Length: 248
Image (tube, rainbow, N blue to C red; front, side):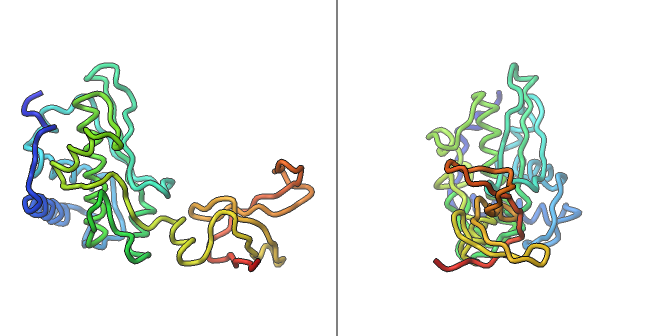
């Protein structure tokens, strides 16, 4: 490798300035992101972000030194995690394949719960800035895989790189997930008893888990699911807004 990417460090003021440059660059170039509170995103936008971060933060290191291939995807299934970086193959540097996935549902939920707007310990001011902070976190994973062959945001090495490059102060994201929207806004959570209308009947059951919809287990002697006491249940996937919490 050329210049050591793991020791590049910026002041807080410089990070803020460079992050704003990246955001403006994306708005200028993107065919889909047209405002800081954009409504849609594409893989091409993530590729633009990579090039901008490489130029503005990393002194062209990625273009010159990244081993193997880096792919991007937008996930509709990731409802609890804002971003994920997967190293698919790392037998040799040339064979290394990494994929960065960004959650569309979590970006879409941005701003729905007041106060849930922090990524890496930094408070975001818009959906665009939240996207950038998520991308920065995943980019550190990419750099760590490239430099060391492994990556973990729980370890000091990752946290030092994230702090030096992007000013991140922790490895957690506090954003609006479907689960938090259900819990805080609707009083819904796993274990809560609920009622809902199904084919003109009112059914009652218990929430098992929550993603985009809630999985509700309803007692049914002919059901396919059985608990440890031998009781049978049927599972219903119900839109959150159609559920009514039951008292007691």
